[in-house]
Image (cartoon, rainbow, N blue to C red):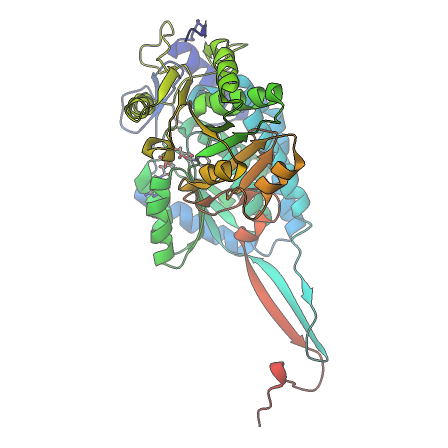
Length: 515
Ligand code: NAD
């Protein structure tokens, strides 16, 4: 498949200078050492270079960060929620001011095209706005008591330190989803970002510390710890961390979930997806093709909500595949910071190898592969740019059940809507799904109790690109957590049921007499 290349890539020196410029603008003061020394390598998928070495957090420092967050919690929990909201409001202002600086870092470190990187920072701004409003709406209920002279109610209280573990592909937004909500709920935060994205994390930490200084609250409300899995494990195992909110692969969730449960901690898991779109005979194909191309090839297939399975009615499958393949041929691939680029790099060589392996397996299972070649970009021998792949599969075989974090779209066909829904639901993950139809019966059936089993089910839009206002998350191996909007804040608070007797009698519930 021939595709367009956005050829000119920046050099590692250009990217280092861009990181330093963004850090200066944001006011991030970190020791950005030359690559190769002792510490955490900060690399870029744009060229494949290691740009800097940053200081890793030691186990003692991680322990101290949790101690500081736990100490800060003792005052923060009794600070009135609307006052807590002022800190988040200031963070939102700083994010607006530094939107382009932070987005530039996201592009360098995660390889997102500029528009998507700006969108990710906009998500942070949106969640700050949402959380500020929420700071005046942490409502409990008053419930009708069965006893005279009694009031029955529910109240919500902060739970403590929230350990936030995040994935590389949303290096800043997922921190903001958790932190903005946790802070207005009265919790404090210790964040362990992906080891692949320490620079964006350092920048976010600088902004929250500035927001704290500007609003006169302690900076220890939100701490950053840098490192790989072992640093995350320290949060997972520490009984002072009341909630572990962990975003990443199913493999990570399998490790984190039981360990937190072992100590009766609370866990919020946002894990992998294997998202499908059903395209029915009545679908508006122009609209469907645009949505499919964005969901399947956008972010080079590296969103948890990326469209990975197309379930097309037999009457539209050939046309759809032709049109998607034609659109793919025009997608500019290359430097994610360049105007016009739509597909940036994969995060690293392992992601590329995984993609090659999945395509080999799909071929062995009878799949017909279009595209999926490595895309050579001048000056990027260590970077991994790929053409998005379309794979027509005879059946939903093992490889299709697996989330390969790369732009592979498996195409399956169906004859009846029941079959399509069964295919949609027959994978272990349950994050996002969509149906393209102009038939209201089909649309409603897809959203009904016996329709899609996913946490997100859309009609006539793709599987990716959710707004912050809704609760975000998925079922089955996606982990069951909900973050961001709606009433997701309840995961960050503990609920108390209070019964107040303002009478001089002592009636017992259920009419029980005792003595
Ligand atoms: P990953 O699982 O490799 O790493 C995620 C984070 O978990 C990293 O910070 C890592 O250091 C940490 N980690 C790994 N093992 C751990 C352990 N045992 N204890 C504590 N921390 C541990 O994921 P990734 O490659 O960075 O991201 C891609 C994956 O994330 C995909 O599967 C994608 O679908 C998923 N994801 C899900 C969502 C969602 O909201 N559902 C959002 C973004 C990404």
